[in-house]
Length: 254
Ligand code: OAD
Image 1 (cartoon, rainbow, N blue to C red):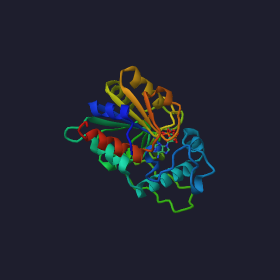
Image 2: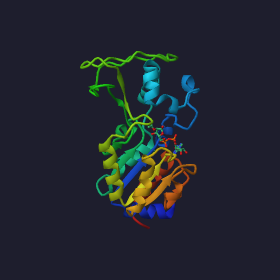
Image 3: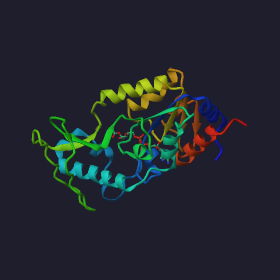
Image 4: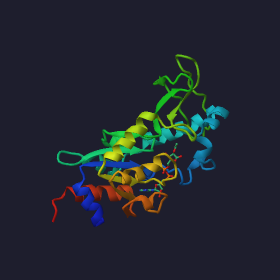
């Protein structure tokens, strides 16, 4: 796998790297992206119909079943070599590496990344829809084909427990957003991996990074809404490109 020369040069000299990831980062682990056709029971629904406060209020058991299905799917898949390459890059003499992800799965953490900012929340974070108290109690199991599950109730106020993810139309959690901006403004290299660049404000981070002086590199098999913001585009997949980049960046210059 030949790493594009300008990308390798930037990676070799980088001291502070931010890897900005979207659903394409999880694709090679077996998690469908948002813009891919959904699989099985959910193929006739689009995330925009399910991942909204309106859908939740209209039919909590239906939306909960979808999230439990995704939660179950993520728990059965493994991080791939790209996740592991990002997690191992920092190392002894490597750069500082932070992950800023739109994904709600925990594949980066399971691969060993310690600095992971979740812009859109996390599947594993369940909370009360009213008092927002975190819920760590038992979750109903979702057998194959089940498309409605009654939500557990909050121990403090009795309201329904909801997924701790950001739905369309909801504000991003302020802490992660301001940390993401600070990280990309301070970075000297930002890899934009596996995102279509459609959903804002996350999609605005590459432009913020570029304006602050970072080298911006897109790793994506196809063109996206943010390709024109990148200094370099690398039409490759995450599980192929990232291990090749990290390995080459570590080698002494020839
Ligand atoms: P999308 O599904 O919109 O885009 C996935 C991107 O990954 C596409 O550009 C694909 O070309 C690319 N891709 C697919 N396979 C890849 C691979 N193996 N390696 C690298 N890239 C690959 O997912 P996101 O951009 O993450 O928001 O979507 C952004 C947000 O929209 C999500 O966080 C979610 C969704 O609605 C909320 O839930 C609020």
